[in-house]
Amino acid sequence: PVSKPIPHPPIYPIVKSVLSLDIKRPVQSMMALAEKYGGIYRLEVPNDSLVIVSGLEYVQEFCDEDRFDKKVFSALEKVRDLTGDGLFTAHTEEPNWGKAHRILTPAFGPHAMQDMFDKMYDVAEQLCVKLERLGPDEPFNVPANMTRLTLDTIALCAFDYRFNSFYKNEMHPFVEAMLFILHEANQHMRRLPIMNRLMYKTKERYNKDIQYMYTVAQKILDQRRKADKAEQVDDLLGRMLEGVDPDTGEKLSDQNIIYQMVTFLIAGHETTSSMMAFTFYEMLKQPHILARVQAEVDEVLGQEKLQFHHLSKLKYMDMVLKECLRLWPIASGFNLRSFKDEQVGEYLIKPTDSIFIFLPSLHRAPIWGEDPKLFNPENFSPENEAKIPPSAYLPFGNGRRSCIGRPFAFQEAKLAIAMILQRFDISLADPNYELVLDETLTIKPDNYFLKFKKRPGFK
Ligand code: HEM
Image (tube, rainbow, N blue to C red):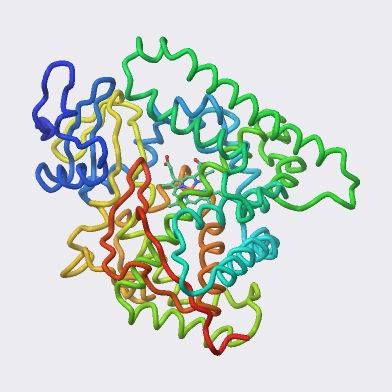
């Protein structure tokens, strides 16, 4: 077939198409470009040629794993300084990806999730105690505190470590180091190579922080090894230390376990916290949805303390969370590459192209009804969910490289939201709040404050 050139915004010398992007609002500008250039367009940036894809007919082809695979693109390549061949940053063909995938998949299975319930409850209880002590008039910074919740939860569930973020204003030094490294990995990609070479101080801190994180992780690992058998915990770390790969008969190396520990912290906190923040935002925007979620919590829990078996009964809350990730896919997309030249529709794709499956536009396609921009949990009623076409809804990525933490994120969010709504009535701190997105590669509501008032009926 004859190939047509992929549509693209104007390309200039040196800056290429960067002028078409608002660097402070990458997600919103890519959405605007998708409206202008369509479901597939090329975006030339100084070190890369991106193909931004959001048209369902193209996405379905790109999700064919025999023809396309995850690409560890430039910013992720830099994060490998910290997470090496951990699950998120590994190339699929690296042996440690398959090995860790096989060992860790059961560690996120239904049994493991049930085992993690008490620890998730422990941290969510700390949040509720804080809300109660704060009282009904104090504005509460939702994204910041949801991040405390998710960071503490993943560290406690993954390796039985307490950051105790609810007891401090500053972040734990381990978390500070992690945030600095991620920020620097992101900035590194945007600077000219000469600038990067000249930033001695930054480079020194970057390397020191990485070493510091490894030292802390190694200490946790050593302590666990030394502990009596009675003290061995069946958490993610326990499973990584003991797990044997069914294919090779091998265990994970200490180095790789440390990469995974850091990977879980990175992948497991900001995404889930933003999902919860957006869920509160959408529920408050349409109070009848909030009322229905709270009524469901009352019906399932009454005055009882939340237990594991309650969670699967919160079916409407499930629909609300799924709809939240449709309208606000926290990870705005994922990168792919082809193994060889591929024809997709009328376009030729080269193995050197960086394909970016762009979710905010995919998830607002006409298949979502008359007003795809409307938050409507009914999109995920059992009847409607069964009708969603393949590859039309991909908040957790695609195929073998999709998110391993999905059940973890849903359990953690449902548990916390149920505990909050059982005990508190929530309202906007500023009734005139207009949504402002805080965008990096992920999105979250900026400057979002709520008030939490103890419910009269709750003992
Ligand atoms: C992969 C989204 C929560 C761990 C991914 C990918 C997406 C994603 C889109 C695919 C990335 C790619 O193809 O490059 C999300 C969202 C979450 C969430 C929206 C919350 C709402 C979590 C949690 C954990 C986690 C809680 C850990 C506890 C991972 C890991 C991978 C991954 C390890 C890499 C899997 C592999 O390639 O083998 N996630 N994630 N995620 N996620 Fe999540």
